[in-house]
Structures are given as C-alpha cells and as structure tokens.
Length: 563
Image 1 (cartoon, rainbow, N blue to C red):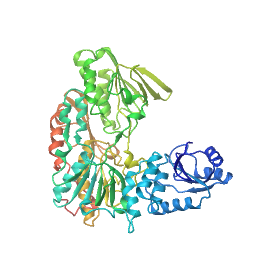
Image 2: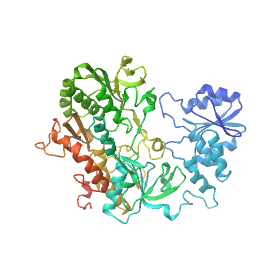
Image 3: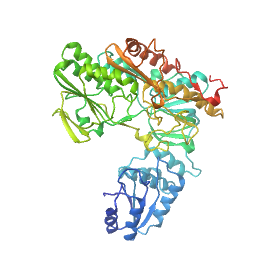
Image 4: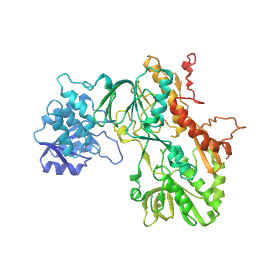
C-alpha cells in the first residue's frame, strides 16, 4: 500500500488488505474510510474483515460504499463527518482511490475554493474536472447542480455518442418531430462505417470510403457539442462534459459504443500494425491485414477471438475466411497453416449456421482451437501465447490477426447508469433505463443481450425514438425490440452466410428463403454487403429512413399508431 496525501491529515489509497492496516496504525492513522462495496471483484477483502483489524489497532472504521458512480448527498455528508470526527490522520480507500478523492472534494464544496479542491486532487494524481460544475454549484450561496446552466445548454434530448446509434436516433426523432431540440455530444471529428473494415482487410473496400466527417452526418438542426461526457447526474437531468459544460435535458440517449482493450493482451499495443500483427477492428490497421495477406506465401497465420462481449462476433471468422479465399485463389493456401483460436467453446453461437461454416473450415483446412485465449504477443519474436485448459501454450506465427478484448467505456462503467458489467442498464425490450425513466440506451454500450452489430443498432434506433417521444408525452413505451442482429459471414469473396437472429438465438430472416436462405452461402447477401448496405447506412439509416426496421408495437400499444 502506497497512500497519497490529499491534504493535511487525509490520505487516499487503492484497495488495502488487512496487513496494510497494521502499517497505517504504525504511521499514525486513526481513522479508515472504506468507499468500496463488498464483492466488486474476486479476492477483495470484506468490510467485516477490515473492520476487525482496524478495531484491533484502535482505529475508527467507516464503511461508506459508492457504486455505479453515484455520489449521493448522504454519502458526501457522512464522509465529511467522518473526517471531522477523526483525532488524527484518516486513510480513505476504494479500488483506485478515485471515489474517495471525489467524496472528499464534494464534501469540501463551500469550505475550500473550487480551484484549490481540484488542484489538491490533481497533485495527488486524480483528475476531478468532471465534477467542477457540481462543486462550484454547491459552493454558491444558492447552489445546486446545474445552477450555472444557461438556456442555450438546455435541450429536449441530449444524445451521448455520435456513432451509428446516436446519429440514427437523432434522425429518427427529427423525422417524427422537427421542433425537438437535440444536442449530440461527440468529441471525434470523423464518423466511421466500421462494418466496412472487414472488406478493407480483404482488399474489397478502400479505407477512405468507410469514413465521413462528423459534421456531414450530424442531422440538420442538431447541435453538435464537440466534447466528451465526463459524468452523469441523472437526478438533476444533466451531464457534465470534460470541459466542464453542464447540459440539461428532458430525455437522455446514451450510445457510447464499446471500448477495445488492446492493453489487456501483454505486448500487443507495442507491436500492433507491424511485425505481422494486425486487426480489422482498427481503422489504421485494417489495410495492414490486406498487405499481409498479399505478402504471405507460406508459413503460419493465426486468427483470434476473445471472450464475449465483442462487437460483431463473426468478424474474427470473416477475416480468416476471406484471407483463406485469397490464398486459395493464388494457389498458396496449401503452404499456409491457418489456426483459429477462440475463447469460446463453439464456432458460432447459433447452431443453424454452423454446418455451412464448418464446410469452409474443412475446405480451407483451418485448425480450430476452442477455449484458447490470446494473452500475450511478442511481435519481434513472432510468437503468440494462449491460455488454454492445460495451461499456457506459445505458438509461432508469420501473420497474427487479433480481435481485442472489449469492455464498457470507463465513463459509463463508473457512472450511475451502469449495470454490474459496466454497460448502460436498459430494459431489453423497451431500451428504457431500468432506474431512470427519461434515459434510454442503445448500441454496443447497452446491456441488452443481443449480438452487438450495426444491424442491431439500425433496429434499435427507431424503437428508442418512439419510446422516448411517448415518455415525453407522459405515456408508457409503445415499441419493443426483439434482439435482432445480423452477421453477414463472408465465407469467400462473392458469397456470404447471412446470419440473422434475435434473443435466444431465434432465427429472424429478413427475406423469404426462396430469395435468401441465410443458412447457406449465397451471392445475393454478398451484393447486399458490398453494394447495398454501405449506401443504406450513409443515405438511409443516418438520415432517419427506417427501411425494413419500422418499430414493432408492444401488445399493450397494439391499438395505438406508431408514427
């Protein structure tokens, strides 16, 4: 344990163990504040265990757990009272020290100048700029979060995220009500068509075709706040940006996407994009995939898939099949060992599509390795280490296509909107938050147990739009989501197995089987993916056109008309 000094008589630390309390007592600590709920992670000492050791050392112990980033007034007051009651140094801790520092900062609002509070936190290594507005407002004579919000910062709807979900929802809302005031909070200047990166990695699409400027896709009439959201205050119907701006809303839509956790694989960040290590999950590295495929004539090519959740669970296989097809076309496939290492136990989660995929696995001579998770990469040494049932195994490679582990964005996971896994906790049918009726979530950052695909977002956005408008009108949700997602599995250049399914793996085909049999490789789905879907994305989905995805009414709303 290495605590950090915030101010005189207050230290903050990451998770401590019982032996650390003996050390703290020897250094003069007379009070301990535990801001972490029990059971957040395996092996975490319980509050009861720590309290017993504190008592044995004559140290006062306070358990003030903070979860889901919710810093309520009662906890803030209790933290301040515990500090004042201490007759010596106090040690406050949580998982990283951030929650403890934030509680101290909020407890000091009105006691110390805001700038001084933030500077003390920064000096200890904690950036609390996201809470500046709340601290400043609480310090004012007639404080209250949002007291400094101007009319220009008040909107009917604030949308967090300028990806597919955020833009499509804004467009669907405006299609139904052109007078509604909407702001989209998005720091990036570019908008990417991510489903196209598989085709970039196969030499089918040009990279530039998958990218448009953010300004060009923001719907006309929507305010673009070019900033990142730092924190949520759902009780005050507000969000605070990284630059300290407070935005108030009547309804909030959260569509943050999912974070790629490259760092979780030891050695990967340092070698990604060189030394034969690539990924179609990165805008910058997808072209490198095609470069490697063209260059490889013999050797070992490995393709990986991490534990769920990941966006487009079929993408790791798509890259593999298209690479194999290119090698077969050049007559070099027989000289290349192709291995697929998946953390899962099956090739694909919906059994109806497995026979067609296995046909291509056998055709290309792919070696399947299930329950095999990539944990480390040595790029210069050209080795990859996998964790398997029998232990760790290391394999050499000439080409390694990595699908990175994925997780909820930190600003969501640390917020009051998150579920235990860190995703926006919404009802899987209505897309409405389970605790805050005026908040909706969709896309890869949502908690719905569907396949995380662009097709799912295309189906969800109109549902969020109609249910949000119903909520603003004082009515219950009127539309429901069936878990639809689509995964066009590119098994060879010119043919696709069009997997379409919903909750529970139920098949949900969009076309009659005489036109497209999704369980079989066919050319028409290839034309959809290569020609139709990009155009539909840019000119339909992002413009509020809901072709083939009109919201499905809930039974209770069957007598109502969805606009």
